[in-house]
Amino acid sequence: MSLDLAGCRVTVTGGAGFLGQAVCERLAARGVNEVAVPRRSDYDLVHEADAVRMYDDLRPDVVLHLAGEVGGIGANRANPGRYFYANMAMALNLIEQARARGIRKFVQVGTICAYPKHTPVPFHEEDLWNGYPEETNAPYGVAKKAALVMLDGYRQQYGLASSYLLPVNLYGPRDNFDPESSHVIPALIRKCETARREGCDHIECWGTGAASREFLYVDDAAEGIIRAAEVMEEPVPINLGTNQEISIRDLVCLVAKQVGFAGEIRWDPTKPDGQPRRCLDVTRAQEQLGWSAVVPFEKGLQQTIDWWRSARPEKT
Image 1 (cartoon, one colour):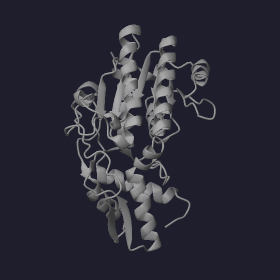
Image 2: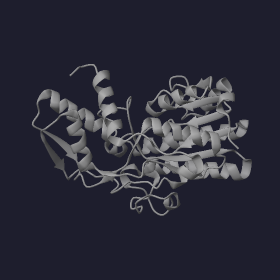
Image 3: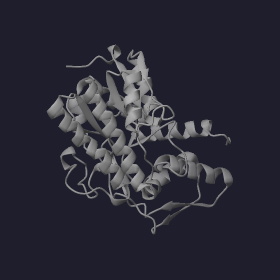
Image 4: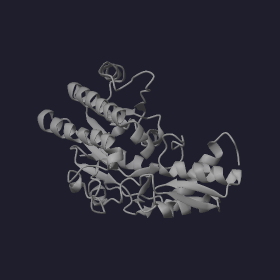
């Protein structure tokens, strides 16, 4: 049975962020007129009282929980305690209040970082519990995975309808390009574009370049999240991805090519590579959501580069 979101009050935590903006745009395109985006300045969802007040004020029928505290490898290494606490606290507060108020649907966006470090490729949802996550992002990954356990327990005991999604690394326009907390694609775009503009003869990259990653365009991820809100009633973990991986070394070369940087790429093997490989099996998303990614990687990457060039203060 499909839920018509156009007749619901939908609250999108993290709705002002990178993924959240894409989700809100897609909700609007579906005719959802009552979409609320709680801002951290008004509701710090790490605190129970603020979560209670958010539910009191916004009275949602459906909650799409996208908010999180997260960053790249460096940020995860610097903030393991904070990332565990903040992400765990938000999930605890929001899911408990959803239960207490009997809302129609709760959608939790998890993380690919929840998978074990040496998960066989492609990642199948059944492998989620077959080991410990990669150490540099384990606190964040475990906190997000614990929300799956909570939702499953709340479905069994209280009948809370929910869904749980595992999106692979996202990218696209409006991504976070902050050098202290950005993920790999925006970090590389910024690094290569800055080097090109300043005439540098080389750039330096972390690790060996041997690790692989899979990337999902933000609009495709947004569509998957909304499909889950419409059709899923149980928190069965569902991968959102493309089933295509690229090595970090090849990724750097591709970004440099599309940006127009022709200098040397130097690798620093004293820095961590992170999880060795990431590539998802997306059969479950196709079967249960009727969803598949549609944006080709090189096209999405160029759109991201074009957005960064137009959005940054200093022009090319």
